[in-house]
Length: 341
Image 1 (cartoon, one colour):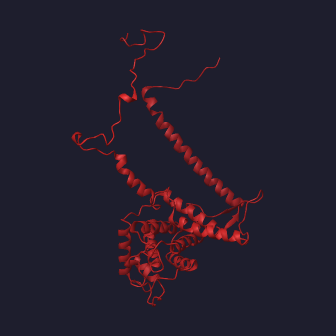
Image 2 (cartoon, rainbow, N blue to C red; image 1 turned 90 degrees about the vertical axis):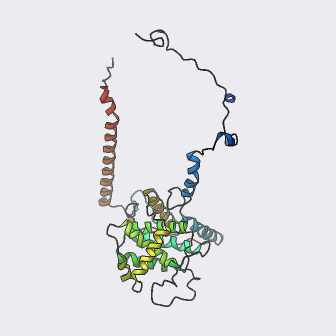
Image 3 (spheres, one colour; image 1 turned 120 degrees about the horizontal axis):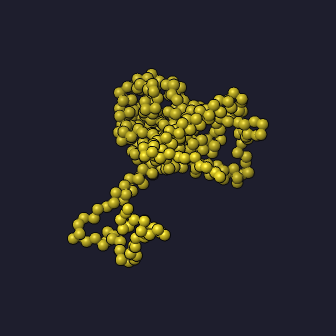
C-alpha cells in the first residue's frame, strides 16, 4: 500500500522522525560588528529602515491616531493650575449646571462623532486655538500669514497686534462668522483643527497674535473644499471678508497646501480622536454639551438605528461565513448531523 514511512508499518504508533538536538552555541548570531569589509556591504533590514519614519509619523497627531493632540497637551497646564488654585483658595468651580442621569430620567446630548453639535464644536475648536496661542513655544511665523503684510480689512492694524493674545470670545466670533456665512458643518470645524495642527507641525511655525486669523482662514478654506460636497469658492469668502482679494486667497491657499506637502488626508481614526479630545477639553473647561432628557420618540429612533447597525453586521458576518466554507464545498465536505444514543 505505502512506502517505508507509511503508518501501516507501525500499527501501534505513528512514525517519528529523529531530529538532531542543536545547541545555540553552535549557531552564533551574526551582527553588524561581525561583518567585515571582505564579506560585502551590510544590508539593513527593511523594518530598521522604516522605524524612523514610523516614529516621526507617530509624533504627528494629525497623521497618527495614537499620538496625543497638541491642543490637549497645551491646555493641561492651565487646567492643572486652575484646579490647584480652586483647591488652595477653597473656591467652588461654579454652579453645578451639569445634569446627571437618574433611574427615572436619562440625559443625553445631541452630539455624536458622525454628527457633532455645530455650536459646541465651534466653541471647542476656538478654545483649542486659544490655548495654542496662549501656550505657544515661540513666535515663529511666515510672511504669507502675517496680518500686517496681508491685512484682512482696510482698517489699520493696531501697533500691539503681535503682542496681545486674542481672547476666546474673539476667536469664537471670527470662526462663527465664517461658518454661519458659508453654511459649513461641524465636521468641517474638526477637520479645520486637524489641518491647523498639521501645518504647525510640518512647517515648524507657531500660531500667534500676528497670524492666527489668516492661519484659521486658510485651514477653514481647505477643510471646506475637502470635506463638504458643495465647496465654497474663494470668491465667496471675499464676500464675507469684504476687503480681501481673490488673488490673496489663492496665494494663501497655494502656500498652505505646499506647507502641508499636499497631505490633506484625514483618516477616520484621527478624526474620531480629535472629536473625543475636544469633548475632553470641553469637560475640563466647563463647556458642557447641551443635554436633553431622553424622550420616547428619541429612544425609539436610537433603538431603530441600533437595530439597523446590528442587522448590517449580521449580514456581513453571514457573507464572511459563506466565503469561509466555500473551500469545503469544492472538495465535497459536508457536515453530518450527530447521532446521540
